[in-house]
Every structure is written in C-alpha cells, then in structure tokens.
Amino acid sequence: MKFFNYTVIFFTFLFLLISCSATKNELIPTDNIGGYKIESKNNSNIPSGLINVFGKVMDIKTKEPISHTQLIIGCTKAKTIENGKYSIIINDTEDLYVFLKAISVGYKTIETKFLNFTNNNFIKIDFYLAEDDRPIINCEGEIINKNNAKNKK
Image (tube, rainbow, N blue to C red; front, side):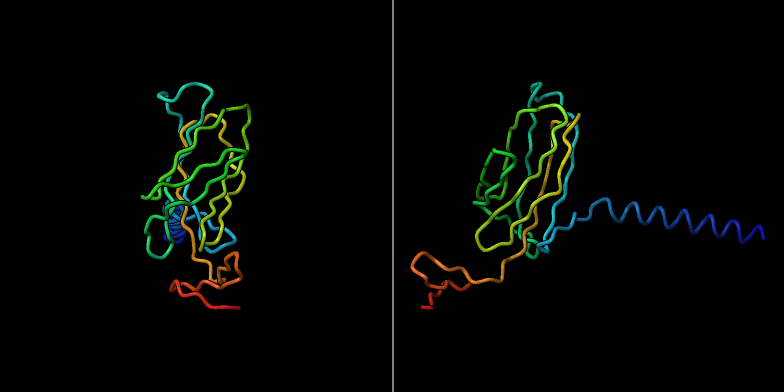
C-alpha cells in the first residue's frame, strides 16, 4: 500500500511538471490557425504612464519575418519593418483591457484575446501568421495567384 501511495504521488508530480513546462512556450492559438506568444513585465526605464508593446510578426511555417504587417491596438496603428519587428507606445490608463490585431496581405488576420496590461508596461507579443489560401483579387477584378501570375475572372 505504501508503494502504491508513492507511485501515485510520483506520477502526479511528474504529470504536473510536464504539463507546466509544455505550455510555457506554446503558442496561444487563434481561430485562424496561427497564434501568438506573450511576455509581460514592469520596466523602470519606461516613463510612467506609458506602455511599450513590441514584438515580431513571422510566418508560422517558415518562421520568416513578415514585413508591412499592420498592427492595431485600440485606436493606435503601426506597421512592421523589413525584419518583421514592431513597437507601439500607448498611454496607460487604469485597468487597461485591450486586444491587438495583426493584418497582412496574403495571411490570415490574428486577433489576441483581451489583454490586461495592469502593472505591466513592457509587453512582448510575437505573432505567427498562417498563409491565407483564398485568392487575392485586385481592383480591376483580376485574380492574383501565389505565383504572381494574373488570371482574368
């Protein structure tokens, strides 16, 4: 009976250890196949009343950076640069609950869950976007396929 108790305790501990470490670096899934990772902390180098939201936008399959992605947080917009990095400074208000949206042509849009930035002013959010399999149609009604060839409707 004593052996059984130790075995149960051991496997319970092992299960808890594995489950905690497995979720630590996983993507937070979204409805559009991709996901995002988030880290937040308080940084004394950032002036009081401001929040720095920054990170990188990457292709989920290739892990290559995606440039010119539009990021929207509240009424503030920003775009990624060529290496997929972005940085947004927003004003801190009490109990700030917002979400961040990443939009890029040819990729599925990702929107985070509502985030609480209370007591954190240094938030890193990395986005992993999945390619959109729908055709892109330009203003003239031409379908642009992934090989950059144009086909008339």
